[in-house]
Length: 346
Figure 1: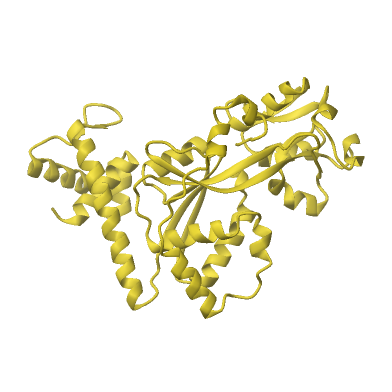
Figure 2 (figure 1 turned 120 degrees about the vertical axis):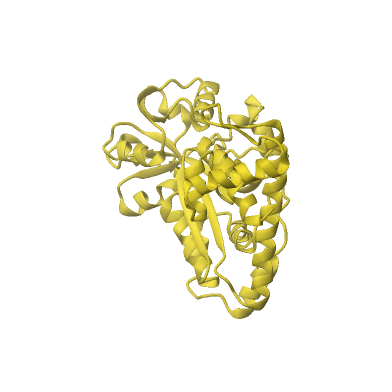
């Protein structure tokens, strides 16, 4: 069968939609349906059960999809590699990130990457944590950026960095005059909290309970941006990852104070589908992220474009595969109540 047909089939399955797969490949919806029908006739089996809504793969379809997915990925990765031997091509990398990574934060990485590889196309989109995992598993994106990353049968997680949690309040709040605060200082205060279904909320609640600290939840939101707006009007204080409030601190809209007596951090990781072969562009972008784990400030300080020698070095390093699994200490935090109190995610 033609490789194009296999790609259409993989896109139909990955996007769970004939219309979206058709649009992705520049064909009509009926054209995508005809391609899948032709594959089924060629194999003599049903690959997709269309009697269910949404449609599901048959057992034969599951096997065929896994094999086709790897074949298609390998071909396009090989095609990109061969083309780059002749000249730099416009490779593409797609990344899904949780909201709290921050648009301004990631834009520095994108700008730096395009300095080194100006013909590249970087697609960055923001979603809820659960949706990021779904997009990575469905091959809708090359990489995902999540907090409290976890490896699974289908997901490989690579540690990127750990972000310290800080108390955030309005400049007029009484805690703004303190040099530092403890969790006990929050006892009885109104808190702007994350939604109860987010992991970061579970871990913050666990840390407060371990210290016997009781707070009053004034508002609940599912993202840091809305929480920061509520804190700015002094509706309450909050506990947030330090890098997420850089812009507000510089503008004087918020005050952040370090926490004493507890090492409260939020781990951030890069997730990718297990067994997926990244193309050169995606591999290079991942290498850039791993090169600057501490803060985007490091990359912002590099005003001068890379020299040709430095660029060549980075390209060479990026050509390798990334097989680092989530380190045991980070993975253990998800299952250990004691460790998890000092490690948070969103």
